[in-house]
Length: 75
Image 1 (spheres, rainbow, N blue to C red):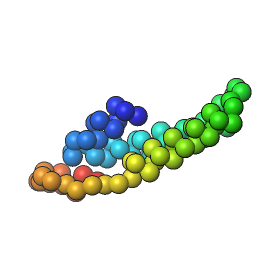
Image 2: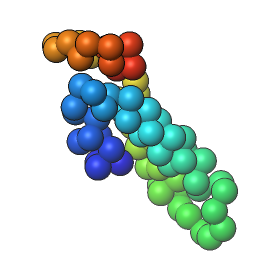
Image 3: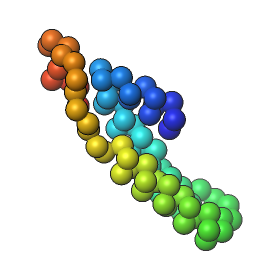
């Protein structure tokens, strides 16, 4: 998650932040999909972290530079 967040700092690679949404969904679903005993505290922590990761990956921010014909691909 940290690696993809750092990559997404570059304007031309902003779409990489959408991968963090998938990681957030996984964090929310993992306690129920994986076998093993997890405490309610660990499950709650996973849900909160997943929701925060999704919420922080959604904002787009401003584009400061122009990249010619690539501008339409920068989301």
